[in-house]
Image 1 (tube, rainbow, N blue to C red):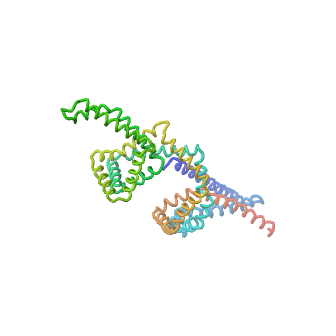
Image 2 (cartoon, helix red, strand yellow; image 1 turned 90 degrees about the vertical axis):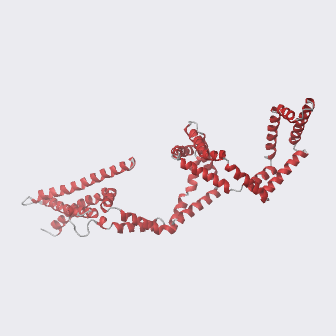
Image 3 (cartoon, helix red, strand yellow; image 1 turned 60 degrees about the vertical axis):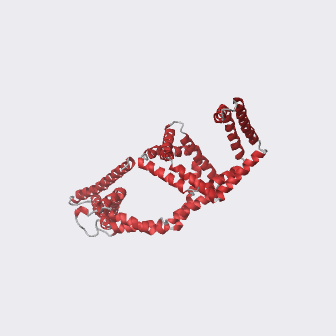
Length: 418
């Protein structure tokens, strides 16, 4: 039990004790006045009036005490008929409660009308659009993530993630996806920057390993070929590669057009050619069978988890900042897009109304749960919840009884005569 629920229960107990003591005190006062006035041998007007009021107050207070007590237990422990109403009728109360919830909370028209009245999507959008609210929500999410991620350190879980990832990769047909990516890159702007960067890397590689080209030519040359000739051959190879790179840099060159055409044919083959699909699938399967790849797949989860945990522990967490910015942006975008709000609300209403066909089972579940409760415990909990308010019935019964008793005494004294 949480601290808040303990505090609430303590407040209810104090209120019940206070009101019960006050109602009992009124009853005791009425009994004392009646006993005192009854001892007077020849009462006058005022003594008679007080005795009549006290007598009626005593009757009203005792009757209401009996009625309130009979709801929860047998008064004085005696099995009077029709007492201990709640414990005896626990099952029927559960069925009635389930029927009440079904008819008054789960009716389709009520759910739909309440959702339209609340407009939860618009409210959520306005709330998230406030930066402080988005930051608060992001902070709450970030606070739960470390505990959640640390709870997932089990070795079996890591192996499961690796197996799942590997199974997804094996089942996935990569060739069409790769083909579409290549086709999009070829037809749009990203191809040229990618080619330029690849050519820059090739030029840098050629510049840094030019000496290696000379050495490789010399190693593969015959002994009788002069070294000068070997060097010229190496220089020719070097210059030819450099010229090819330079020609490929020119977007209008034939080499660049030929490269684009080759990429387009490759993209088309990856999407439509069964042979290309088979080759990609075989390459993928061979790659996944490599021990290094297996180790990498197993370590994927650990690496991702460590990165996220390290970032969340940082005062300037990028994860928290990204969450807050993303949530605020979501709120702003959703707040401006009434069409999306309507679609989300329609989906939310659909989900809520999907519960309606199950409402009979929900009512049955409530009745079954109540049926499983202990009768005395249930009565005690209900008395704790509403018992302090029921004590006002006792108070009112005592006071109203006193007023009625005094009124009847006055009527009998002045209207009906001595």
